[in-house]
Length: 446
Image (cartoon, rainbow, N blue to C red; front, side, top):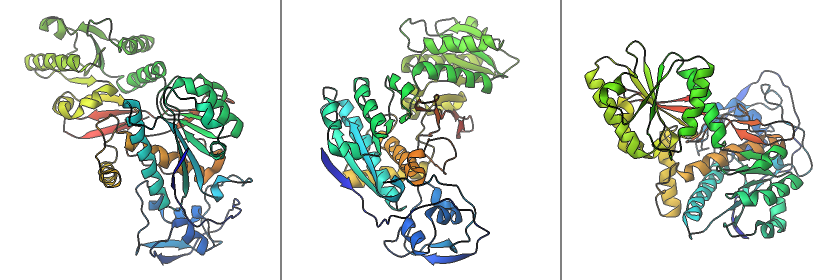
């Protein structure tokens, strides 16, 4: 184990209790160099929650406490009623530095390692951002390659101290890590899509990505909700090896359940036959059962021919998350055909913050972010802010549910639901990225 990083801030062991107080009066404080949100609150005899409530901008993920800024200070004992924190317990994480563990392949041997190094760097940038909010984080990181035995790492005393562990990347390491986190009541964040049946019996697990089968079903339901007034046209790529046949099968089942009329056609159909699948009375939404770039390009060519021969025909396209990797090259077509892409991430959610993080990454690590999709450093940054801020505010009672605090993601919306009594939590945040014909891009969240 290597102790890679430690953030320090002045923290005292204060017993936080729930309070209900009357209407507030405020004074103004001018921020001095080196001051933190927590330290300012303590110096005025108020809680950090009260200070943030008086200055709503502090809840933004990109908020930075700057020297010379003027902030409102509610007079002690007269703050507005706020969220009720859970009672403190011995060694409560809200009273000290959060101890964050990272158990991922952190090496330069293969693509897995290089991707996880970038994700880890994003976690570190998130910790640095939280430092300006007065949240201190101790970071412990272990390299857990595909061939490694994670039990050796879990036997180390530092592992048992962790309040939260990000990992693993490999399903075969789930049993050991899940049992360890259950024993020590450690929050376990599975950042990426792996097989993790242990979530059914471990309330400390938070899985960011849903299984493909679950995503197919939820996407089909949301498709049917959003496009209830459209005429769906499902286009077969005529390739039995397509990975998207499962989605179009789930979609057809959902449409049939709701008695929604749809048409079937093929990429190989002659133009006249292809055109006959479209409605001239209603808006059409086209769904291709392939995420391959070559099939996507063929579809756009056929739609171009279709619409040039049928003036006034209204067509939208429903794509796949994989298409996001080609957004730059296909941007014109995405906008032309009013494209909707279902995705758990979108790097354009906070463009100014994304640019800031890209510059910061270059400055900190002397290289640009890689071209991986999604940008993994930004994923790590989002995860750090969401989970560490949640631990700092709610301690071990943090459940990741919507509305626990103002969370402005760079690219990764997060909203967790517990799967059942005694079970873990799964991210249910979902959105359609809409490339509109007016060249604007919207995100439609559920």
